[in-house]
Length: 408
Image (cartoon, rainbow, N blue to C red; front, side, top):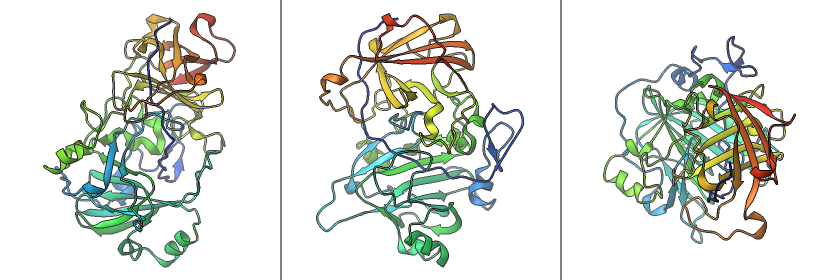
């Protein structure tokens, strides 16, 4: 199938760290996938046990009374669902971008949105499972429990507030000072609504809200996500902010459709749309020993995070590296492609937009068709795929020995 050109997103790579827990094998899971203690039979996670060590209390609605950053410090908010670089599957968090730093102002404050307990503190000084070494890492991540079901996740903090650091033991503080990598630290540090928990500067603050009282329908097989299976409980933070704060934050968000903070779950059984994982690659966690990146076996057919009318094809291994494309003619719509369609060809194109839809100028080498993705849904949850970099649909007639099988 040959189609007319369409635009897509071009942005820089971001990263969200994992919170790893002890691994154990389990039967009846997709080949190559491992699960962790605290995993239920359906592949979902008991986050009260994993993150709060069974001590979380309280149910019912949780309301956020404070912004993660001062409103006057925020330049824009990028909703979740972005696909870029190693973020092959739609990203499970959004980004709060601060305004440019003023002279003598190296950082911005980060606040707890409501009362709770910090239950996990992570410190990253290197990016494991990847050859990406473009900057020195010295980032902090926090998991904040607000009830037995609701958690806030922050990442890319430049530093922790001294009041938080004082609650950590001396050996942990020393490790952080020496920038020595280590596992996440489980703690139970009380915080109040609007309390400063850290600072961010020179990059975005990542934010996600997890509510285990809800479950996203567009993740068909949670067990494929391993210790990332908390993704099935990611919710829209705008639903938790009190007014007028909610409306004030929405003005900083370029997405104009519901849900305003974006969407990450697109799986439809028997349709092409959604996330796929190469058989034997380890599902979403992938192979952390592979220096090319855990995302190598990822594949996603989804929609632009700001303008969901735009089809995006996101590939973990396109000529050896992760790439994202729009498709010529914006079709066929992956939500309508089934096994009855047989072989389907996507002509892959770039588009002159940044993450907010602002036009940028593409160079001569980035115009036109960049390659072809040939797909065939062979069963409801089985997919055959082959990429042909540098070719167009007219020159691709069928699969070769290089085709791979994907599952979900």
